[in-house]
Image (cartoon, rainbow, N blue to C red; front, side, top):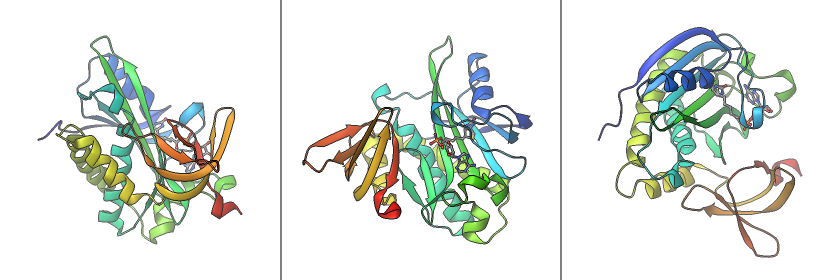
Amino acid sequence: MTCFVPRVLHYESLPSTNTEAARLAIEGADEGLAVVADEQTAGRGRLARKWSSPKGAGLYVSVLLKPKISPDYWPLLTFVSALAVGDAVREKFQLETDIKWPNDLLAGERKFCGILAEVVETGHGRAVVLGTGVNLTQAAVPPDLCDVATSISEASGQHPDRDSLLAAFLVRIEYWYSILHSEGGPDQLLSSWMSRSSYALGKSVRVRDGERTLEGVTAGLDSRGGLRLRKPTGEVVILMAGDVTNLRAVS
Ligand code: BT5
């Protein structure tokens, strides 16, 4: 089943591709619109954090989606992008990557991609803008984050071409989005995600979620994509948001 045909709108510079895609959604744009910019002057992550987006150094793209699945499963849209980036990077650069819950892709333990899914009220129903930032070259990596962030060029030793990565990414977004809408799709998506994430099971982590900080061992995902964390007491809590640190890497 094909859910949508991607249509790319390209800009030289935008404050944020997510903001532009949301604006176009409110104007009535169709599902599958992909807003791409050569640079973002106000690229953002979760909780209004900054996403470094210098000109020509990264892929900055936002895809407009109008999911027909229960909103319970909308958190899985972030996983749709994570799987699509992983596929595209493997296909184009033979690079194996890891996924860190909920929204990071890593190469050699360092982040090269972040995903930001935002819900938009459009006047003709709710839509989701699925924003993805991929560091192509080291110029995208903020100097103070060199130890924790990387780029495709550094991780693969290749010179990535943005538009061929974008084309591969959009094919895979459509694929995983179709899976999500198929019978048993959410479970299939979750198990694919789990098989590609070293963080899914048995990882000692610290999770910061607002005011609270928890430590424990990961114990898989729940049906809505929440992280199951087994605390030292044995109690399992389910987290729907947070920042995860690998405790083995810091100690
Ligand atoms: C994210 O947030 O990782 C989501 C990033 C989404 C960016 C895309 S680009 C296209 C679309 N348009 C937008 O405006 N946004 C989306 P979060 O997990 O909150 O991580 C943000 C943190 O990552 C920052 O606070 C920095 O520590 C770090 N960071 C910033 N820029 C980075 C970069 N280029 N590479 C790696 N880490 C970065």
